[in-house]
Length: 98
Length: 235
Image 1 (cartoon, rainbow over the protein chains, first blue to last red):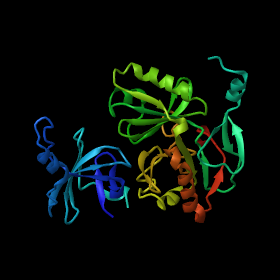
Image 2: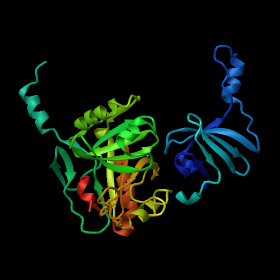
Image 3: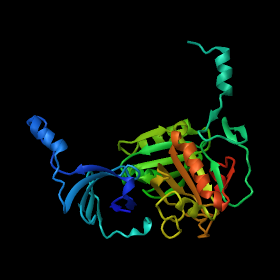
Image 4: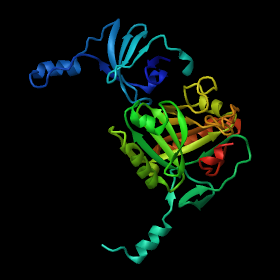
């Protein structure tokens, strides 16, 4: 089981979350070209290594989180609430979830 | 248009129904409830008739101070002359539970309470859109362990804990409200009570959640019992 240390709820089973996708800057809709917009929506780096992703805690705090995750080992370095900046270290104790 | 005599009679005799089917239906406080009385120590009761009001506000502002309950905790508060259980199951979200039939009055009282905070708040009566059950007994944490990944032991989730998680794959607010304890104020005893959990979910998932809990607790002797209300939980 993969645990995500939610900054609000503590370590939780990853099944409580929805994976939104790789995090990145959103192009300006006023100036973006259709090609750039498609690239933003559908083309991802999908790298093997550290990646910054957005996850939604649908069965918990209902917040969008920015997660630094190693895609090979599933190690998580930081988790941050995208709205408030509340952070959670990966060293959060796992007692609250099994 | 004026209400016809037939409509007036219908309005007086209308009975609200829980999404959870009652084995022995009877009517109490305008709700169809189960008249079954369990004899065992581990029980599941349908508490859907309780008034359920959702409050949303900044998670740590003046509204939180006015409600007197922080995120992750519960508290019993006097609002509008009634004793209400407030649970902070999400950041900036509170669930207020009151006696059956008090939903509208509770909304009015909460709006009045929060009006002076100067914060953007919303108060919404969810009574007929949600299901609520109470799982009570010493074995309740182990029953929940069968359908939920949270550790419900006393050290991790003590009495007064509120959280939202996935229970049997249903998004559920879990409120630990033990029987036989006084948590705060001059009456605080520190006594350990009987573990008791209120589980609150969308109405359409209520019957499934109750069935899943009964299945998980079958080996531990889980029995269905009738509506108990808020106050019987206090010892």
